[in-house]
Structures are given as structure tokens and as C-alpha cells.
Image (cartoon, rainbow, N blue to C red; front, side, top):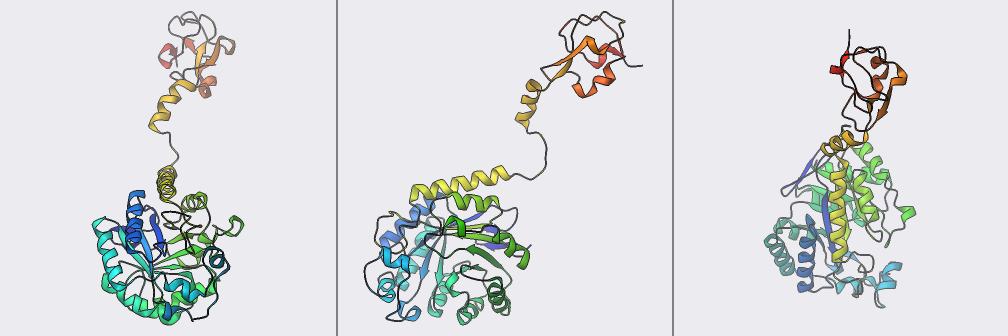
Length: 350
């Protein structure tokens, strides 16, 4: 399994999960709101903040219909009219990239057209994130791959065969550093549809690092995904779920994002290294709660010990009960008082 470097982070098995706070278009076309989203992502402890870069006229036809969830969360009008309001300028993206750098958080954005790819390359994003809807857009994939940077590829709405086709296009340009994200492109995605075990399928099939792009409500699924081995976690967030726009309602608010990041880091600590051994604190508990062989009655010096003379009680600082058969039949070397722990030094072993 390969590892992939993004900025100063190593992505892969055994490495900390790379957490992407997906601002997307939740800035509502407002550069100042976008900067507040960067602040919120940084304060939550995310590794990266990600936006979306596009020119509406190059992405969608004038009369393209909205998705059902977009109809429910935005005003009337076409998809073009909706996303046109969410465009940011080239100057905006340069400004946001500089702002993120000052805030010490990785700046990312998903490009949706070739000009946006070129812009992000000029800004020097460390990795290109490809949205699920572009996985069959081979001209765009080829253009991205020619930039010779790592690629994170979301796989929502795909079959395994479609993922393989996209990988072939990317690899044909010489790109080897690829991360796959399992994803369910539904907003919000239903728990019964999440299918986290598909991450393992992707990992086995393509021998690449695999993460998860989450569209469920809440933080339960991201935590479970990391426990199952997701090396990247991408999650939408907003400053306020009640803001107008297509993605706010299915996003986390800053306090929830912070809670998710903390939970993921806690899960990583809890996963450990897989070696079964007592912890330092368990060593102290073991002394208290395990049992030892003790004298049930007074045992005079020289007495041959029988089974009815001994018992097992706490603490666990003496001879362990599993050695009971070795103690029976031995001769006491000293007087052993009732309820005293028996030690090997008190027995004649020959």
C-alpha cells in the first residue's frame, strides 16, 4: 500500500487521518464569509479546508434542472442560476489561499473545468480533489493529471469498473499518488446506504489509500469510517445551517466540526498498535483485583500442604491460583498464618 504526501502530511495506513473541512460553496459567494469558514476549520483542528472552483457557464447549461435536494434548499430557478451566485473570482481564490496559509491550514479546492484546474495549479494547491460527478469526465481528469500532482478521487455514484476506468486515465499520465474516497452522493445520505465496507473493497481492488467523503447527518459515520481505516475524512461544514444555499442543511456547524475532529483523534488513539499486552495502569489494577494463594488455616513450619489448607483471595501479589497444584504437596519452611499470602520462599520446593 502506497503512502501519499499532501503538504507536510503523510497519508496512508498507520498515519493520522487527514481531515478535510469541506466549505464547498457554503460561502454563498461572499469572500468574507469564506474567510470565516477558514477560521472555523482551523479552530476545529482540521488539516485542510476545501472549496469548489468553477465557472458556471463551463459546468452547466442555462436550463439544467436542479437536484431534488437543491430544489428543497434554494430559491426557484435553474441550476445555472443557483451556482452562478456561488462563483468566486480568481482574485478571491488567490486571497483565500494566502489567508489559509497565514492561518496554517492546507488550502484545497475541487476544480470543475480546465481553467479552474489551471488557476488552482498556479495557486499551488498540494493536491487536486476530484468531485464524484467528474469521475467520467476523462478530458478533465487528463488535464488534472498532466499537472503531475497527487489526486484525491471521490467515487460517489460509481461502480468498481468506473473507478478502474478513471484510474487508468489518471495513471496513463504518470500519476501514481492517488487516494480514493468512498462516497454516497445523496444529500443527506441515508444510513442504510452508507456501506462503509466498500472502503475495504476499494482498498483490496486498487491497493491505494482509501478514505471517506461523508454526506450523512451528524458525526457518527465519520467516526466509524476512521475506526474502519479511513485515511482521509471529508465533511461539509457551514457557519450556520439556516443560511440560504444548497449545502448548508446537510453540513456541520463549527462546534460539531470541532467535536468530529476530536472524536476522530480519540478513535485513532484508541485503535493502538494491535499488540495485546497490559497497559501500565492495568498493571496497578492487576495487583488489586487478581487473586493469590493464601492460607485458609494456620500452617505450622514443616507441614505438608494439602488442598483444604489453602484458598485464593485478593490481592494478586502472591502465587497465582493457576499454580495451585504445584503448591499442594510442598512442605512449609516457616509458620504461615491464616489468611497470609503464600510465597515460593516459604515452601520447600525439593
